[in-house]
Length: 432
Ligand code: HEC
Ligand code: HEC
Ligand code: HEC
Ligand code: HEC
Image (cartoon, rainbow, N blue to C red):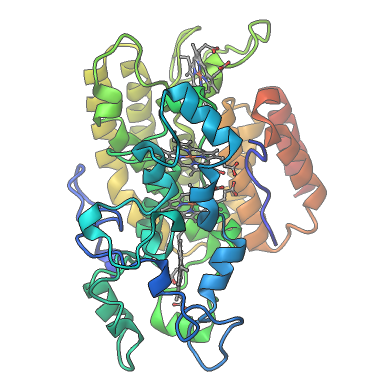
């Protein structure tokens, strides 16, 4: 089933996640030392460029065709030629979008010149190696008989199968890193708001692989609920990490606004929304975007209730710090990150049976009905979570009408009415 789209317009499990920020992770493809040989090196008809899946092979071998014809990533560079991109570039004072590093860093595999192989072409956009890692050391060997996935990983292939590592990879462009970021300036010039949820985006990227029997022999199979939770935890941590970077800490009169709820500012003035929430922010405060953390807290109410009080206290401290100073935000983000880090692996690896999945869905909808998710980006994450859980539980078809109506309340962020979302959440609870 194709998932509803956001904003239609517009063994690496050893990741040492414990500890405050010092995280041993595989380097992102863009940051590795390996040569990126270019899509042309993957695309020949004896490699990944076949016309249809090869029944003899463990992998399909038509991955290039799928990427080229169906995957948005293959057009990411071309997007920089559109009128919309041109307008963005002009407003930013850039000679062109296709020549601008800030655009290419996310819309292409923009590695350093010395990391580009003979067949590398920037115009390939987000090509194979932007996700699978520079193939300099494994291009020859990975197709040889007897080569294991572990051999490939040891030679610099990126562990896209690992949910936490995958989340970091996708978020590097779908949220940003310390080196590249979709700032409010870029948004102000007309770039779409970036929204991300790992399971939904995994499903929405046209699959060029199949999780079949031989896949499961070679790689772990991750149930959708675990993928969702891995994404939620990593998005929360990634956001807290970015809050400690120059994007946020740099002194200026107005802080980097894309860390905040867009609709704190962008909503009509006669639509008075303020209510005092448990975090105690006063009227008129600009609220940090804590969507994934807010949803994560609701999840933990079900899975690890003993962790919730401390996390909620830390999150409140973060919001309170945002009224004070950047230094206090950084300290609060670091503290919350340290508390969250040990939970990420557990959340992504635990087994969630149908009863617990039902409980998770009920908790999310209950909190939504009680207007605990009053901010658009959190409501959006709640919808996607409820949809993921319903698909996993197998009752999404029966609940189709309810899901459609709930989706309608978050479909257009400019029309979001918190009370409507609460009312529809209550109706959906009634239909479970
Ligand atoms: C190197 C940067 C980069 C990485 C890494 C990346 N993406 Fe993207 N992604 C983009 C860009 C840029 C677009 C927009 C392309 C366009 O429309 O021109 C995009 C678009 C998409 C879309 C379509 C958007 C929509 O609204 O439906 C999906 C789905 C998606 N990416 C999923 C993923 C997933 C899943 C991962 C991780 C496995 C990932 N992406 C990793 C840059 C990236
Ligand atoms: C931090 C990464 C990042 C940066 C920097 C970035 N983009 Fe994007 N851009 C994305 C992603 C991811 C998407 C897809 C969003 C989605 O659909 O969820 C996107 C979408 C777009 C779209 C809409 C594409 C469509 O099909 O609707 C345009 C146009 C665009 N970007 C242009 C630019 C330009 C021009 C720049 C440079 C000024 C730029 N982007 C910088 C990540 C980035
Ligand atoms: C936006 C990220 C992204 C891009 C771009 C991308 N892939 Fe993938 N690829 C993935 C993910 C995610 C998986 C599934 C997880 C896994 O098995 O590692 C995957 C899986 C695969 C697999 C493994 C299938 C299996 O059964 O083990 C092959 C082969 C593959 N991709 C080849 C390619 C080729 C060739 C290209 C370029 C034409 C490409 N990919 C582009 C993200 C990407
Ligand atoms: C603290 C308040 C604040 C927050 C938070 C904020 N913005 Fe803005 N935004 C502004 C101001 C001020 C302007 C410039 C004045 C204007 O054009 O309305 C602006 C301008 C814009 C514009 C251009 C409007 C135009 O008419 O040219 C866009 C698009 C935009 N913001 C998107 C976003 C997105 C997306 C987010 C969240 C990621 C966001 N904003 C968060 C205050 C905010």
